[in-house]
Length: 124
Image (cartoon, rainbow, N blue to C red; front, top):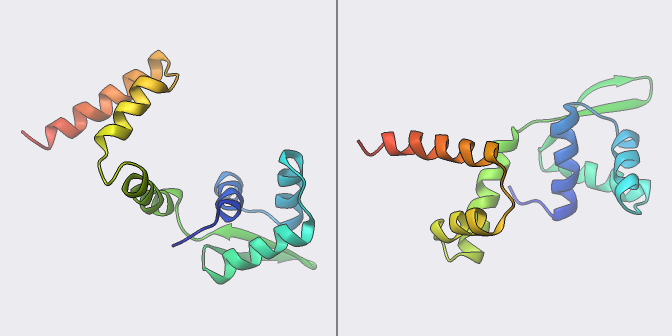
């Protein structure tokens, strides 16, 4: 599934809220940056057409939408594409970049260590 940056931003809100209306999404987006309601509604319509969200219920004339796909199923191909484009398909430089350049706290480092420990088990 291919999503524009704006579509991905709106999807993030649907994943966070699990269910929302176009006016609710617009209100949140408008707090972050200038965006007309009609623009946000167009993005929601596109996401519905792409089968990323669905109409889950109505209340009067108000339509509630919810995500169809889990965040991980959308994130994985996007990250793979990013690694292919930016790191020529190699994940090691990305991992090194995160460890060397990003601000990690102890909890982050412990989490990454636990992920690495689990992955090592695959090679034994």
